[in-house]
Image (cartoon, rainbow, N blue to C red; front, side, top):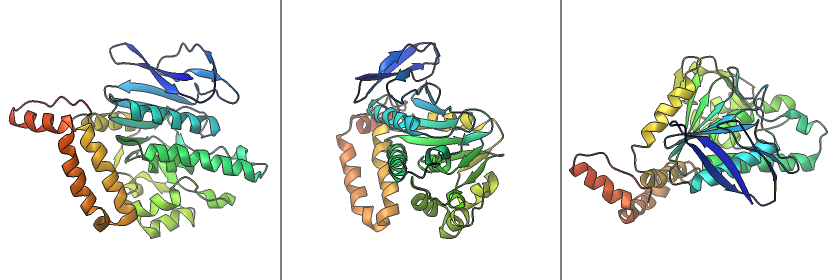
Length: 303
């Protein structure tokens, strides 16, 4: 069955992106531009929780689940399905994840889901969080988090799954799960220490410290701090620079960088050389070299 994202190009053209889904939804026509259609099949009703816009070669995904842009089963499944489609779209080179409104990027999981203490539900939610944010981490292009406010718990883990993080000056970042007897289950315990070191990771997860934007920049948790209201625009500007790079080369480089976390640099040096040679089979490699010598802008085809 097909799910469709309606995307509005900057020239006003409406683009329909289909997403494969395993069970049959009853579709409701959606009159809102830039947003995922509403689906009424079991628990699915994604229109008000995720919106998508296409800016050139960039997909802008906005978490739109007020009041705190929390994640639930529906939005996590929706994010995973959307990312599966984006990975198949040769016209998308980068994506930006932002939060709707001025206060929250995302406050993480809706704790009401865990109120009854059901272990089976906890296992299911942990799986959905893991699958969604692993799909975000494995996105073949460049992903950028535009952190416009609070990024707490699973909200920060969403940002950690992105390649680059841009935070507004008023943003606060935290992994406070231990304060309610839980722990980060979507990559926080593994990715945060790699970025900020073991000491700061323990301060945030074991001591419950909240980190402001300037501190986050200083310890390497974010790459840039901007003024309030500017994170989305700055992220889109940075994403536009990705379109100047060969998407085939970006797709080859990204896992080499990420792989150093697991095996260290020595474990990937031989693989780096092999992937360099493999690029000579790509059309984009020949285009890039020819464009350099012909003093023109390369026209990437993503193949």
